[in-house]
Image (cartoon, rainbow, N blue to C red; front, side, top):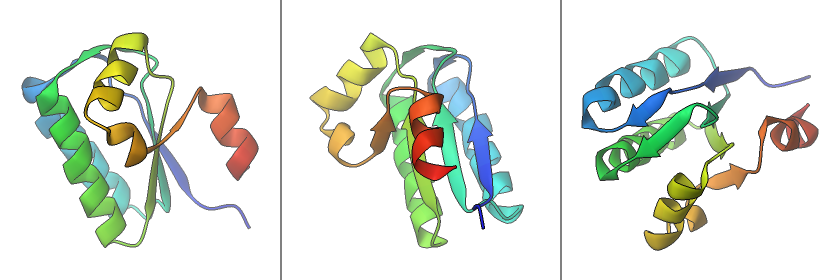
Length: 105
């Protein structure tokens, strides 16, 4: 039986102005029964520390509900932010959506 997977795909700049909307999407996904949440960064052009903070809060919410969260398709700037803050050790990051699907579908 496949788990219920919800893909959230933020767009543009993931910063403080978009963090509230992002958190709302996470909360709705948890409430609607998602077991795994995949955040697809394909269309994210830039992320700052506020965006990273929103992801950390989302991860705490998701883990607190006994669910899982994964990330995929980061550009070079976003990946560098994760590496510099060592968040690449906290989050499981896939190269792209296909790599994620190979593991879970």
